[in-house]
Structure formats: C-alpha cells, structure tokens
Amino acid sequence: MRDDVLNPTRNSTMTLEGSSTPWAYWAIRHLFRNALRVFYGNIVLEGVENIPQRGVPCILCPNHSNSLMDSLLVCTQIPSERREFIRPVAKSTLWGKRNFGSWLVENTGAVPIKQRRDFDNAPVDNTESMGKIIEALELGDMILMFPEGVSRYHPSMSPLKAGVARIVSDVLSRNRDNPEFDVTVATCSITYTHREHFRSDVLVTFHPPMVFNPKTNPDLLSPITEDSVRAVTERMRQSISSGTWDAPSWKVLRAAKLAANIYAPLGARMSLGNYVRLVKLFVETFKPLHAENEEEMATLELEEDLNEYQDQLSRLGLTDSSRHLRRGPASDTWDEIAEIKVSSGVVASIPVWIFASLVGLLYSSYAPIAVTIVMWMSLRWMEDAVASLRSAAVLRRLLLTSESVLGGLGSTREDIRCRILAIATRKLALPDDPETNLADSGMDGLADISRYFSVLRRRKRDWNEVLRLHNKTEYPAEDS
Image 1 (cartoon, rainbow, N blue to C red):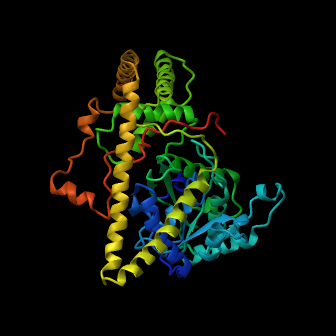
Image 2: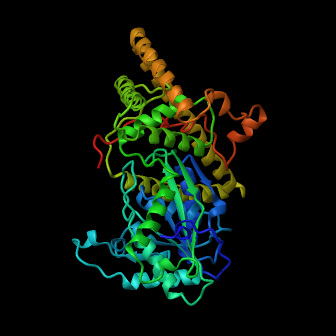
Image 3: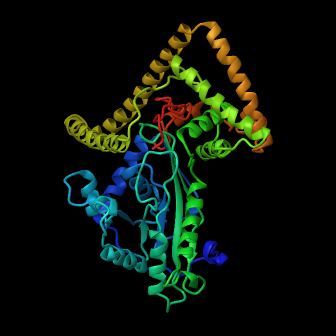
C-alpha cells in the first residue's frame, strides 16, 4: 500500500455548492445547540480549523459511544461558518416509528442504512442508500458516518467497519475521469467525562483530514483490494483513537482516571483537552502488560493498588478529593436517559417561559426579558444550593470516619502518589510539579462576579461543580 494513500497531504481546491439546509435541520440545530450546552457543563471543540469548508465533499467519522446524542452533538456544535448542513447516516430501523428519534432522522436529510444484525443477519441491499451518499458527496455535502457501526457503552472503541473506505473507493471510481475531484475523510474523537449525567463535560477533537483523489490514490479505484480497504480503515481507527480514552477495560480506565486526579488534583487547573490527554497517557501506561520486567511488574502493581484504594474510598462513601460519590446501578439505558433529559428540559422550559412571559406582559412589556433572567438565575442558585448540600454530606461522612481509617487512607494515598509521580516523570515525561506547571491565572474581584452572571460561560469551581462527577468511579462490573 502506497504511503500517499495513508498520508495524503494535498489540500483540496475543489469547492462545490452543497445541498440546501432543510428547515427541520435548521430548527433542530438552533434549538438543541443551546439545549446541549445547558445539559452538558462544558462542550469544548478542538481543531475546528480541520473541519472542511462548505462545498468540499467530506465524510465525517467520529467514535460512537452515546447513541443519538453523538449525532446531535456533532451536527449542532460545528460552527455554521464551517458547515451549515451535515447529512447524517443512521440505521434504517429508526425510520417509521412514532418517537422523537424517528421524526429527527426523517426530517433532517438523514440517509437510512440497513444493518444485517437488524434483519436476523440476513443479506441486505443498501444500493439505493449508497447511491444517495455518493450523489450527496458529488454535490459537496458532508456525510456523518459512525464507522463503528453501533453505539455501545464500553471503554474501548468497536472495530471499525470497512464501509467508509468502500464509499471513498466508489465515489473516486465514479469520478476517475476527473483528476481534480477530491473526497475528504475527516475524523473526530468525542470524549464524555460522564456521558449519561447532567452537567458533565464533552471534548470534541477534530483531526487533520485525509484527502483522496483519483490521480494520487489509484489504489483506491475499483477494483479495490482488501489490503487497501484495511489500510484506510486502520488509519481512521488510529486517528479517532488518538483523541479519546479507548481503554481496554473499565478497570484500566478507572485506574487511569484516579492516577490523573492524584497526579494533577482539582486545584491544578487545566483545560478539558489537557485533562483528557492526561488520562489517555495513563490509559496507555496501564494497558495489559505481560510483566516481563521489573518496570512492567511495578506498573501492574500500581494499577491494582489504585483500584484497591478506590474500592476502600467507595466503601466509605468518599472520593480521593473528599467529594460526594454518586451511587447507582450501571446499565446500558443511559443513552436514552441522556436523550430524555435533554428533550424534557427543552420541552419543559419553553412553555414555562411562554406562559410566564404572557402573564407578565399584562403588567410590563419587559416581562419576557425579566422571565429569562429569573429562569437563568434560578438555575444558578439551585446549582449552588445543591453543591452546598452535597459538600455538607461529604463533611458528615468525614466526621463519621475514624481518625485511624483516615490516617491509613492518607498513608496509602501518599505511597501511591509517589509511585504515580515516578512513572509520570520518568516514563511519561510529565513535569514533577503539576500544580504549578498546569495552573492557569485565575480571575478575582469584579471579573469573578461578571463570570458568575455570564450567560455564555458557566461558573465551575471544578470539572463538575454541582454533581461532583469528576471522580465518578462506578462502572459495569463486567466488560461487555
């Protein structure tokens, strides 16, 4: 396989018109853009400059861990100056049902794809759908495809399907007589700190795109070899995996998160992107080793000790940062729970605002503005009240824990911290003083007050100010 297939460097100069934006897509984009920013505490986009501009034929390929929320997140948060309309691809079984998901895919220009697992593994015919995708690309559209093929709640990515590579081959083969026709594969990584919970954080990282062309990538022209398909698919997998945790097990992810929190505690401020990358470093460190030497044995022992330390904290109802640990059974229904929370919040808030504004207009023409301010500040004050109550609950647990137990936990933590610092500085080349090196200049005085009242940026004392989910440690007991 030629290197230019895996690492194309030529920038696309061909720009087409692209399809017009359906009204339903426009409405949903604006409605859920704000709803998602209320549901999630922070939504951070990295590498926006890597998103191909409107009119450039493109297939956007993220990882898929949160069902319909992944599509909503990508379609609503990408800046409109980069892409106004993104055409999603979804499984055909979403069509024809009387629910929100069905209405969404049917009215936003989505393309249905039949999956064998939905038809008892019987052969399926996607000829018509593939034709629609190729025609959309030839118009200059962006197609949203999840190459994993299925959403699942698991710490690792599923193996990627070969569909994207074959579509690239089909569209290039159909335009083989046009040496200037480019098709771009843009990968992105979506990382949820705690995907199913209100006010958790999301990082979306867009990676440098891969640009393919009939002239420079003849190996992708029909008939294409399986080696070419696998090479492109593997390149996509490596790109997507590089920007998210992709841990082999919950045990490894649990240990990596705790190691990152101990190495750089909540007092050491850092961007969400740096936090995700820090956890990723520890995930790579704790991936299954064969303990063939003393260093690997020490790493395995550290992973075991981290999980045991976390088990002790969980039994006491504490976390490493003395925050309240949320409890509850782990289930695979969190996709629907997250979707219902967002939808319910939107549906509930709009009629409340309309009703209150109409009643208020009987007394003042400024009522809609006043209602908006009151609703917003009610959310702010409610968050502070919940945060204070949960802090009080933490203090109560600490008071009920004996000094000898706390002393033992402190000694265990200090031993683990020293071992983590040794790995971080020697193996990962991280600074030995993270609290100083990672600290950002804080805001004080009037700046703090203005930030508290800001509509655009919510105040957060730590990663998840209200629910204290930064240190969530409960995951499914078995990998699935």
